[in-house]
Image (tube, rainbow, N blue to C red):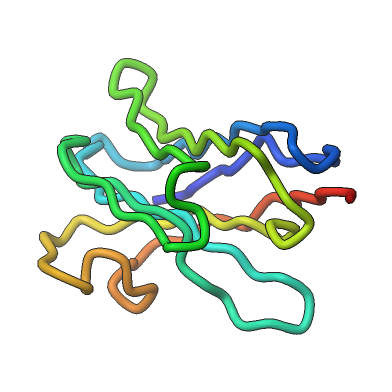
Length: 126
């Protein structure tokens, strides 16, 4: 399974961006999908995740109320709508996927995602 993330770019603080992640290489589209980010000099951190059917979403506290993760099953992709961006959101954003069911915090632990994309840079200028 390959994951292609897109939609990153340079925006001013307070503006919005939408990232997309498209899985390929498998006819099975029922993946749990997640977004993680890594800022320069920092460890990778969880951002948001969505269950295989879109029924459950998980968010990091730092993005709750500003970011929305959603599946577009018709287009076989997952979007991350990011609003009211701040300089602290500057990072490389990675999408990840996994076929396994999850429970509790395992639903958004990076170690529980098997497939990873290459990342897309988001830069927020203040």
